[in-house]
Length: 284
Ligand code: 9MG
Image 1 (tube, rainbow, N blue to C red):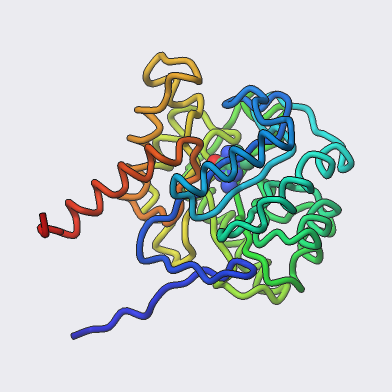
Image 2: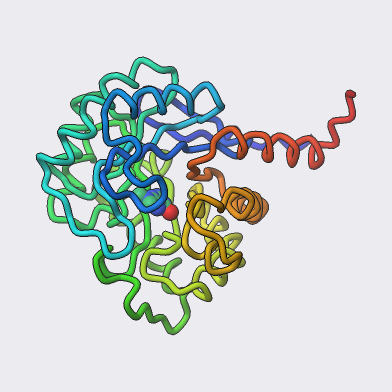
């Protein structure tokens, strides 16, 4: 029998087995997040929602204090810190890794000091000082591809070959991390659906996900409630659950190790059904 070594992702206090797809629950603590309209701006509500997502089956919580929806303006470090730090501190007692979605090195330091286990950076640690903010810690890092900046990225995204360009960008960022002394078992990569991409670019990337995962670093796919699903289905942001579930399953089928989602319970159910069919679990 050939034994396959257990693949694990080192995420701060945790080592997560990658023998099944993991669910990263989105917790936006922002006033204008495009997909949940600022419902969790209040820290108490955000904490309550984070707890609920863990009960529903989230493997990681991703807390964000800055909206990154297309057209969004940047927030200050102070605003972001005021939003996320109390939520990190409260949710750190739950038995799941806490990820913080930020591109600001100063906030990375503060989030790690407050107990975050992972940094999810839409700029893939390109900001001056970002690499040194995280290198010496044990946190995991999500390196995401984005063309341009949230404010302008959807104005005219352009690629010669979107899949090749995203792949080579992610490889370069992985190697920059390795040069900074960050071990590969702390890294995940993300093609950044909707970040400087047209619907067509997103579809090419989703089809090409097996090529990204072939590079051996776990792939994160964030498709939940995104406008590409609205473009396909004609549905508003609150009506994209079915599209989000379909997209998450398609991503997992194409090698995604982690799906970043708003609807944890429904995603978990869909993954369990998929797993039962694929594993031929006929115990019933
Ligand atoms: C913050 N954020 C919004 N969408 C995202 C996505 O698709 N991936 C990651 N890693 N972060 C995202």
